[in-house]
Length: 332
Image (cartoon, rainbow, N blue to C red):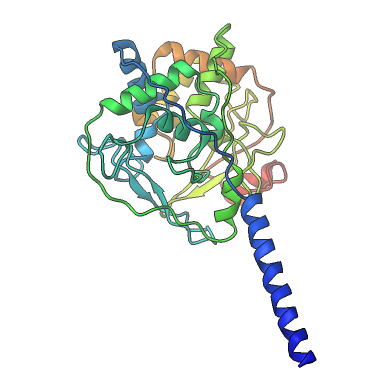
């Protein structure tokens, strides 16, 4: 009997340990979420136009949140969401969904409050407090000013509701827990520093999430210190790999570019006789204003120059600078 009692006590202790570890794990990897408020954003023609510009042009939000490939959304499908293809070299079998962001009541955000929509954009959680994946650049959007956020919400409320039922994102272990550490509540007012063309350009580049693609990242997709905007990250969607170019003012980046040639690049996708990968949304950047492109250019010119050769047409080799495998990597 004593032996049976010891076994039962051991099982109880083991069960308690398992429950304790599970509870601790859950608490540790629980998204940081603030309570939503009754905040409402009053529509105006100015907010509607500014929101359209951010969502449909500068931020290219509709590119991810609409069906189809890497191109400008087809008329009549804007914002209805899609399943994002997983990179071919990704060892994780994630199912990543860019949700329906039209104001459809059943499959979109029609029943969401203004603050739930704003919280999702800047803080990375849905209305139920579930965290998004890093495919949603909330770490960039948390710098979006309160007024621009209001404009985006007003615009999303105005687009045509489209019914498109999609599955929920499913992430493999342990990523499904790690992404819960990403959300970060915004509890204070956010304004944009537009005091100089360079600082205005920095803000615009943030809304366009330029450094999301053009910075070198570690295995957890955190930007490597000192390698912001140097390029070298490789993304494989389909047969052709996309390699992010160097945007620092070094000669291997945009050092030889004028404001005019930079605008032409952003709108045509042509660089040194090569056509940029279609993941670069030049078909939407074509509508970015001259003033905005000029200020983004001035901001990029203010960065620390980093010599980093990235040549998509060259042989893919290991790079000692960014530690990635990309075209021309061994030349660094």
